[in-house]
Image (cartoon, rainbow, N blue to C red; front, top):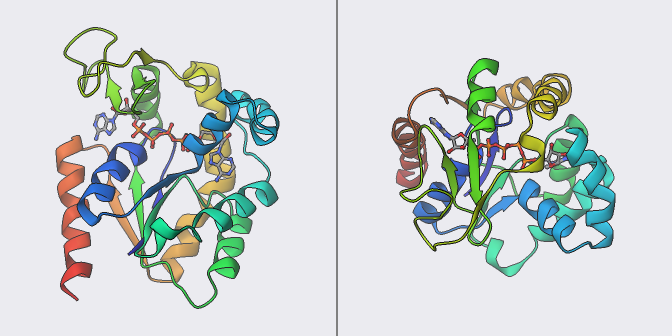
Length: 216
Ligand code: AP5
């Protein structure tokens, strides 16, 4: 299956993508993770992306389309993939379609959450430096303070999870990404999920949608 996870920052896309990747044995392609890895390694892409990420604005479409176009051609994507955080503009969606040609996106899972919830989720999010596991200090805390349950790695807070940057990311989402909801609804491949329920309930709702595809 080829799946897109759509939703505001902090909706739980990364959390759910990890579960879907395991369930369907397909890779999670998180453009945010790819960009942050490049920033960490100080690559040319990382140098370009850093200022956009830290301001909470979008990295230019041409760069992102090229990146994803190449990534989905890799061997591990032959049975499908989950795009987490891409596309984020209509231009990216069109670029993706062009790159895919005959291949089609099967489902767009739109995880919807209100602004109040987003700010609480992102300001208390912590991530493992080593394995990328996602925690929340209130809703999904690690057993030991500052330490990953899965691998013992150190937990950190993302630079763009500061309140001012979060507000800007939300504004950018409303202006540039939200129009994709209608774009995919018109194509009849959009599934809306209430992202304000617990991780397990959201998980269950997504599972039910995916199971229908697997049965066909
Ligand atoms: P990216 O990394 O994609 O960030 P985002 O879209 O803002 O999404 P997040 O990763 O912040 O949130 P999420 O929805 O994955 O939530 P999570 O599961 O972590 O992008 C970062 C930046 O990179 C962008 O601002 C941009 O600059 C650039 N970029 C990336 N892609 C781009 C593109 N295509 N084009 C241009 N620029 C691009 O959950 C959040 C928290 O909530 C966690 O603490 C989690 O434990 C908790 N949580 C999750 N679900 C629940 C639940 N159901 N109940 C309670 N808590 C929950």
